[in-house]
Length: 247
Image 1 (cartoon, rainbow, N blue to C red):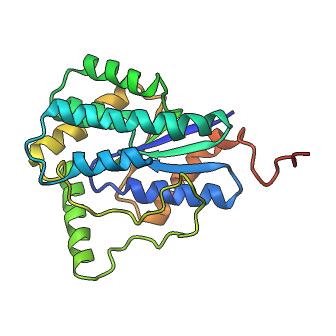
Image 2 (cartoon, helix red, strand yellow):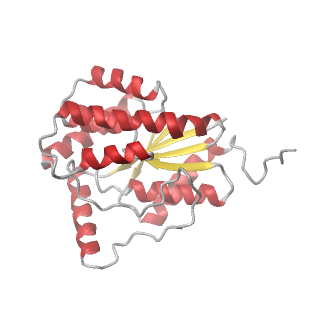
């Protein structure tokens, strides 16, 4: 048995921080777990990330953007996610296919049936077991991200927790939580509002898969609620520490 958990939310919702805190929680208890992010998580995916998020690439067509995100996802699923799930582990993914539906579908107005077809090809039909959604309005999220980025540039603490730096490799993403202001962040507020509304529609379509949390909660309190909500899901995962030794 395995478990595939994805994190979704608007910009500035704190999903990357919460994904890392959940990783630390599970890893400390001996669970076989990896943490990856989208786009990225592989050498090829990281190269695509630089292209698709670069502020200078203002000429990028919407179709190009959608296909680049899907290409990075295909590499991540084939190289990391599916192999680790096949071993019975837990995969935590900072964004996944729902981001395409929210950002390129509802945000840019792409045809949803087209997106679902391309996503099915990219992922081989792999779906998350559970998706953690950090609920925050688009306006609040963008303001939070601007403020934290400004604090970082001024050398002031942003309030984020200091997370362990000795997390196991090769696949776990241990880079600092990014406060980069990328090409998607720079779009008009109306776009980000459509994205947030799109998430609401996605949750309504599959309520059994989603678990929503108030992103305004203190970081530690929010991490505790997420970990508690996942307890029933991880009971069947065999801990590394308790696994029988191989002859």
